[in-house]
Image (cartoon, rainbow, N blue to C red; front, side, top):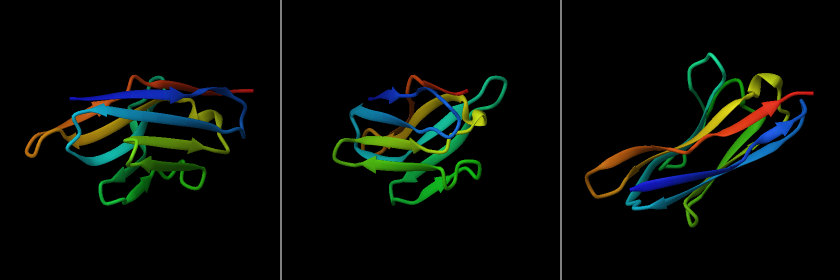
Length: 120
């Protein structure tokens, strides 16, 4: 089916920047949406940003204006550029792809997670 491999993440000071990348491989017939979620300790996983197949982009209110999601259709990849990072952005970030792997069947796929820590 579909495999996702994330890269990026790490430790940066408040105000810094990080870039996350996610590469998809496998049987992708048609992508429904790609996006990034995050989960902080003791909190539920939440949507950070997403792009639908029709290129409609959605951001969480908490990151709008600071984060930018982009998609490379040729490479089946999705990136998340994170600027002006705050301590409250600290979380494990997960890449998500919803895609058809055949003409009639679709799946919901997750990356392995990337730790992002914002601390001075």
